[in-house]
Structures are given as C-alpha cells and as structure tokens.
Image (tube, rainbow, N blue to C red; front, side, top):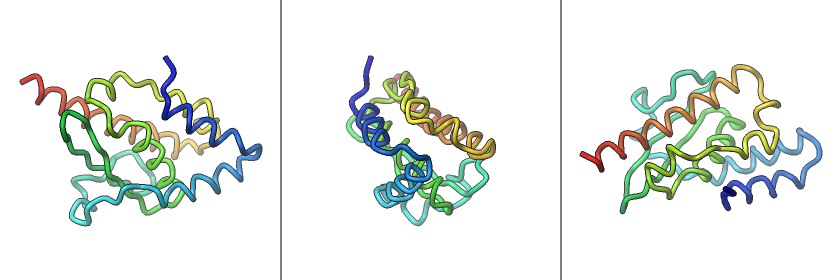
Length: 140
C-alpha cells in the first residue's frame, strides 16, 4: 500500500539527479525538524549506534505518536527529519507496521557510509520502540 507522506518524499528527491544535490536537500530539511525540548538533549534520549549524537523523544497525543529530534551532525539531522515526517501523527500500531520504503526508493541506504547506515537503522529502531511502548500502554 502506498503511503502519501513517503510518496511525497520520493517525489521531492526525484527532482535531483546527483547525490550531492540530494545531500544539499537533506541539509535543507534539517531546518524543518520539530525542535526537541532542550531538557531532552541528554543521554537518556540519545540513540545508541549513531556515530553522531542524535536525540529523539516521542509523545502520545490523542492516540497518535509525535516525535521531536535533533542531531549535532547536519546530514544526520536531515535524515531524522525525514523519519519524523514519515512516522509522526500515526497510531503506535501504524508506526510499528510501517515499511519505510522511501529510504530505498530515494537511494538513501546505498548512499550512506556504513556508520551512517547503522545510525539510520538505530534511529528507526528507537522510533519503533517508542511506538511499541505506547501501544503496550494503550493495551494495558
């Protein structure tokens, strides 16, 4: 099933032929990231497995999960901005079930260094863990 947000991301990236241009766009996207509360820029919210420092927080509002995040590396900040955009505003179960196919569709996975690819997987894992925690609270 096609996901409108992911399709939008794929369309945006299809405008660029070169990966350098896509990296520039990722850097631009870092400005769109919902700011994480300064109190959450600490080790409790940092994602293990990322080369750069990445902080992610999530809250459940009216049955839907909303993420905020930040990173000290600009490209990583753009990547987490894409993940926040793709996953925020969904129910916990939708997030757990979401296949983030846009990553391969825009060529992101194959154009990241191995350490950044590991970081990407770690970010996705943490975001899905938040959703699982919220889902278990709802079902308790």
